[in-house]
Amino acid sequence: MQLMDSSHSNPMSLCSQADSQRTLYPYVTGTSVIGVKYKDGILMAADMGGSYGSTLRYKSVERMKPIGKHSLLGASGEISDFQEILHYLDELILYDNMWDDGNSLGPKEVHSYLTRVMYNRRNKFNPLWNSLVLGGVKNGQKYLGTVSMIGVHFEDNHVATGFGNHLARPILRDEWHEDLSFEDGVKLLEKCMRVLLYRDRSAVNKLQIAKITEEGVTISQPYSLKTFWGFSAFQNPTVGAEGSW
Amino acid sequence: MQRKVALKITTTLCTKNGCLDAGTIERVQSLAFLIPQAFVANTQRSLHWFLRLRSSSIFQVCVMSKAVVDVPPKGGFSFDLCRRNEMLSKKGVQTPPFRKTGTTIVGLVFQDGVILGADTRATEGPIVCDKNCEKIHYMAPNIYCCGAGTAADTEAVTDMVSSQLQLHRYHTGRESRVVTALTLLKSHLFSYQGYVQAALVLGGVDCTGPHLHTIYPHGSTDTLPFATMGSGSLAAMAVFESKYHEGLTREEGINLVSEAICSGIFNDLGSGSNVDVCVITKGHKEYLRNHQLPNPRTYVSAKGYSFPKPIEVLLTKVTPLKEKVEVIEGGDAMEE
Picture (cartoon, rainbow over the protein chains, first blue to last red):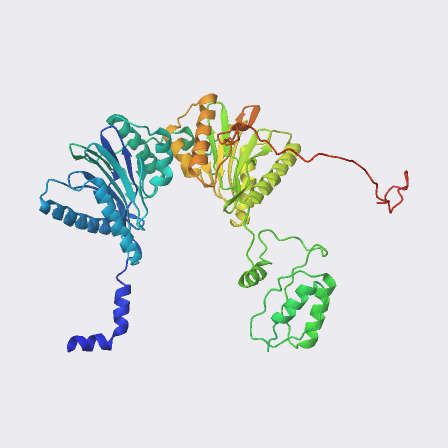
């Protein structure tokens, strides 16, 4: 009885409640993630910054996580939505393990699942505000794919999210080739991350590199890149024109 | 009691351009505003007389007249046509798209001087309107400027400052300095508050050494060892940030510039076609137009084209038409 009363008396508030529960804009965001295929599997790099608008609020956010036995997920965008996605994937992997049939979900399957989730949420106008990079190896097959917040998904030899699309993809298109060794792959990723560090305002100089091979996932300890600021033009930009800037 | 000039009389004056219609002044409770159209001086006087007749109070009528009257031109942007543009767009008339250069332009300082580079695509919205335009503009024998943004703005601004520099050279009897061009460009762009959408990379070598500057549409400038502008600037900057170092040789510099422009051409939709390079050193410059052509026309039929056999010509007959006008040879020359 009471319930009926409340629902009759304020139909307007019901509508407004539904409205305020959609994602309208992101709050705590992570910047770009880059992934490349190399000889033994996939290499992925992401920095550890979580920005709250224009403040660098969190500096130890792990934006790459292993999923099951065969996949590695990196995310940029809203951190809370990333944690929600990890929760969904946890459940997915749990149910898969409960089957106990000797089979396990590979990266292609997880990618497909994520695509469906992201696209469905977008159709309800309540997106998970993330751009995801999913990489993995199963039965010798390497797989690297990406899903955006509206459900755009594709698979490629090298992917990047956010600013990485504009700054890192050109370098990767030029310099990536089949069967990169581990050292070459890391050097290539570090080159891209350095450019991002110089030119992306929400980047931090604390990054992790993750690798996934047939054996399993390894996520490195956080470390920072060396930067160079010693150009002579930076030392004295107004030489020849005293008083200008 | 204040009478104000009504909208009605304003539009009448505007459309007839100088002819003063006896429109009524309505009592409108709005502020006196600028009559934003120009009209001839005697119309101005008659307007004053007309309005004074109809009202007892004195009020201001501001007018802006064109070249017929000796009024010194006010600098900066004139917002004359904004109201009319708004009215037109409300009626559904779309503004024609600007011809933008949607570009990749770069510059870098190497050991002997400055190297500038640019792509050659000019776009009008989604269409490529010029496949091989020139974006590296001449400023002085020792100074060149690449331009991105609205093509008309970059051309006009660089032309204007180039002429000013030449006059300055005649006046002083010395080679132009890069900072002179920089100051002329930045003060012009600033006075137009960003409405002149020209983003420039200015480079040159003068008596004080090699200089490279970027100039943004609002008038701010940077002095840099390497610079990129335009829609492809991020792709080109990625190449520069990873590969630039001090003390490049000429070959290394040209290769790096070409690589950066190619990165812009292949990774940005607003840039394309060919690579232009300009190398400026002390006392010498080299403008390498179409230094690289990485987008050749590939799908040309190797066998050539064969056309069906034409119809045979059986008979040829020429009939001159009767001339209506008699042409007199050696008649009077056209009068000026």
